[in-house]
Image (cartoon, rainbow, N blue to C red):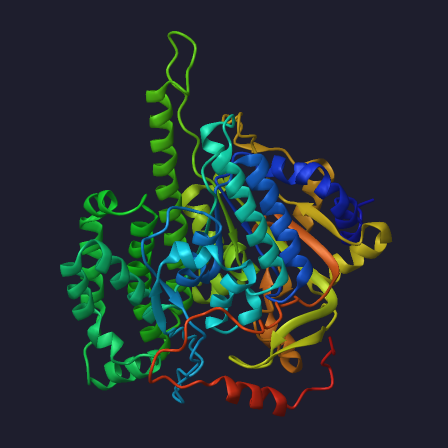
Length: 557
């Protein structure tokens, strides 16, 4: 007799405690030689998702030589964290963000994320060395949603990564590739205005003439600061032409000067940062313009841009590894037996932190089938091939979640509705109740070959895993909660038809989760004062928070 769907899924579970054994040995074995591992989350506000993702990432860094951590956040703010953890040599000067000025236009584009951050140029080495992790993370207050990255788990991970990179710096007996500092970069493109600042600040240091060209090319765009919507309105009305061509030429000029600029300044991180910021300005201008015009292409623009960042970071770190390898060969440190060719350097490997909606293969969702929507997970599989990437999703049933009720609104701790009847979440919850000792578990849908056995393109699933994979290859409603949680319209707002076992390679279900814990406010943030002439909106934010009409489902924490 054929087993029920529930029994089939329940039999294939691997308990979370088993998954975590020996620094996630089973997970690392399933990842195999994959170059990119993407780790998601059903919500942007669940403590356990963040903690588990950080723990898996730590294991990949320590045991599998992953050297890049790329997060669904803004590149300029995360580059400051990258410098803080010792991810690379720091520029002589670096623009450092001050507390945000949060201004939105009242137009139809009023919900477009903005990140206009006044800046002050200081000695980055001196400034960062005097700051605690919490103080450095004040830069993450620049844009809604603040809790998404300015939280306890990210603080602890940044603190650990700083110590790990310091350990690598002083290591004397480790293989050269395990002494490369681990990078911490942002993937997202919402920082249009701030990224122009970063490009100009870099060029001021390496090529003042080119810096003046950058000021002219970005000049019209800057006139509309801090409102992307105002720029979009001006383009739509014909007041100004779209600045796309000028922005593209700026990026092309940076491309053409790569070799020269890298020789002039630092170890390459500064050029990489400037180049990525110039690329972000180009992508962001298109994204905001298309958003304002009501285009359905904006999701694809954003995820293609994040994919570009992943590939650029891999290429850059491949270059770093090759140069370290070359130095080791020339110094005799990488000696091989007589007559043998020197070993090739390992490839750079990256971990990506983002929402399930970005990292689960879009081809397994109704968004792809109905609207042609792609995402990072889909693009990574297309570009690298399934055997060179690994997609890990997280799900939950109930508990609490941190989210806002509207864009740019105050965050609340809210009760999470149980998964809807007939949904993937309900099925996984029912499976969790089969054996209460295994309420939290993983389901493997695909396994890669080991790193040292590239001829084996894919490792086999067990018979019970294969049976569960087949049962979960049927479309079911799946929940996605971003920074907003609209409980009144949960089915329409947060569910989509998905084929779970095609969407992910591994799904980890945590049956009950709790709200993400943000960092407390600092009493006296050690940040530069606001730019002269700007308005301090913080007092209005406090008034709004105090006057907020809290719904009855809010949880006091």
